[in-house]
Image (cartoon, rainbow, N blue to C red; front, side):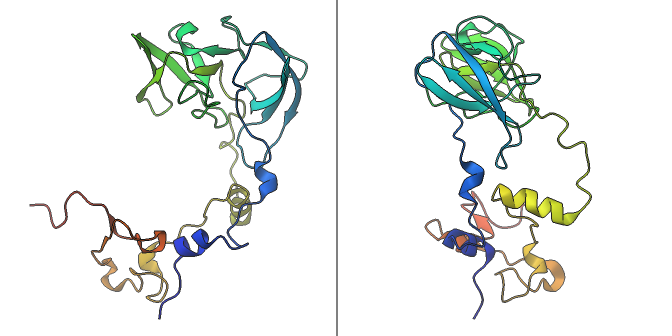
Length: 231
C-alpha cells in the first residue's frame, strides 16, 4: 500500500508543513476610509514578505502596507489626489505612464496585486469605468477606476541579485513563507510514493483525475479539455 503523497501530507496540516503564524502577523491592507495624511512611524522586516513593510499612523488608527523605494521613518504620505511617491490614490486620478504598486482588485479590498519587493506596474489607458494597467508580466489587466494604489515602486529591488549559494539557506527562505522546496519530480519518486513513481522509461501514466477528487488524488491531467495524442 502506498504512502500519502506530498500534497496530501501538506493538506493534512501537520506541524511539519504548517507555516509559522509569527511570519504572517502583519495584515497588509488599506483602511476602508482614508482621508487626509498619514505618517510612517516604523519600517519593519517580515519573514513572509519580500518587501519591507511600513506602519502608517493616520487620524483613525494605524495600518500596514509594503514600503516604497526610498521611504523613511517620519515621512508624511497623503491619501488625496496628489501624485507624489508613496501617496495612496484612486486609479481614476493617476496620470498615464505612472508607476504604481499594491493595487486593489476591487474597490475597498485593501490591495491584492503588485506587492513583491522591487515590483511595479504602470497605468496604460482609461476606457470608461475601467483603467488598464500594464503588469510586470507585460500583460494588461483591467481594474475599476475607484480601486486604490500606491504611487511608486515597492522597496526591496535587487533581492535576487545576490546568489543564495547554499541549498540550506534556500530551504529556510521557502519554509518561512510556507512554500514547498525542493520540488521533486513525480517520475523520480518510488512507486510507493506517487502514482507516477518508479519512472520506468520515464513515461508517466496518462491519468485523468476526477473533478471532485481530493488534493492528493489530483495528479496527471486535471480537468483536461481533451485527451489523447494530437494528430
